[in-house]
Length: 162
Image (cartoon, rainbow, N blue to C red; front, side):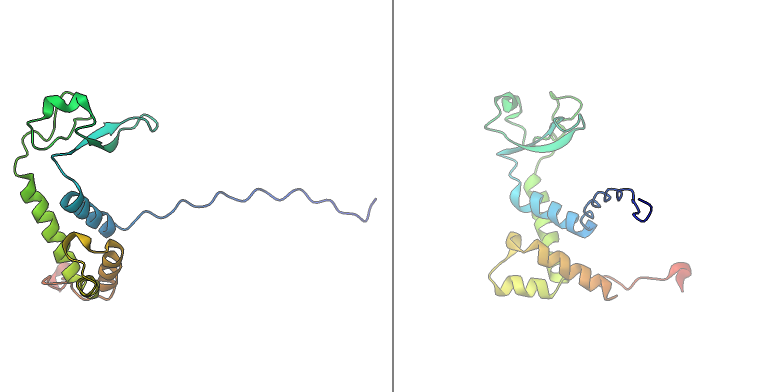
């Protein structure tokens, strides 16, 4: 009886930590890639869904597969207003193809600033929208960690002008 010690059960292990959010540079590059290379305003519409806990979440909708979107057929860019389904927030956005060209140029400039990632993309026959975003983000992060300014950017100035 007296020689045997009884220990309380071990507390449960804490839940695993949530994954770290992606770096901002990756999100920007993915946005440039999606809206510059993937999104087609003639066949896609941006809409909203409240299926996940009541919070509006952006969704991509096929224009042809949604008969209710026929009223917006002549409007070049369809972005449904999350507060009013009858309103197209993108109705005044003409020449969206020029915005897309700008996004593709910005993506190419980021690839050029990344140096090695751009060289690998060109060597493998990838150009424009076929750039490997993972390699590009890594190269950009490596370049910024090395303290070297990317592209034509001037070196940072210390606070106070010194």
